[in-house]
Length: 163
Image 1 (cartoon, rainbow, N blue to C red):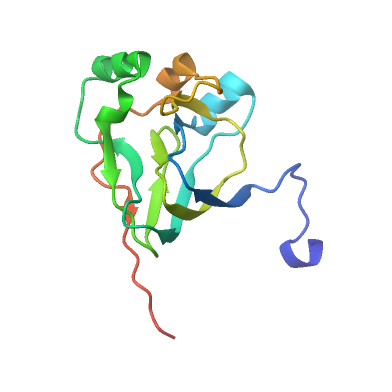
Image 2: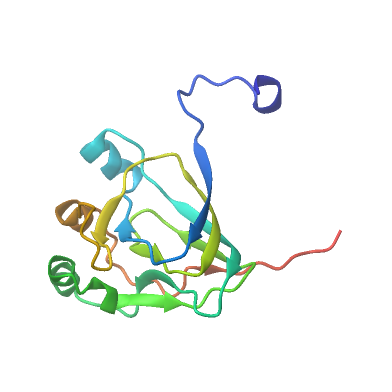
C-alpha cells in the first residue's frame, strides 16, 4: 500500500467507504464536527457523502429540516420523539449524490443501497430509532452537536462528461 498511497504517520486512514443495504429505515442520527468530536469524545468528526447505487420507488432519505424552525422547537421534538415530523424527505434515484455535513440530522429510509464515503469516525448520536428500543438514544449529545440552520438542498448536482 505504501507504494500506492505514500508514507503516512497517521494511525488510521482518513476516509472510510461503506456499502449500506437499507431494507428498513436506519436510525435518525447526527455526527459532530471535528471541534466538537475532539471536545466531547477525543475523536474525529464525521462528514459523509452518499451515492445512491439502487433505490426502490418507495425509497426515502431524511436529511435536514423541512423549513426553518426555532431551535427550541427542534430540541423539544428531540426530547419527545417527534423529530421525524421536522425532517426534509427526499425521494432518491439511482445515480444521485447527497452531501451530509457534520451536524446535519439524517437517516436512510428503506429500499436503498448506498455507497457512503465518510471521514473515519465512530461517533454517532442516535436521536430516534422508529420505535425500536434495543439501542440507546443520545439526545443530550445530539442537541449539542446539531446544526439547527436551515439548508435548502443537500442533493448534489452532477453531470457526467463523456471522455
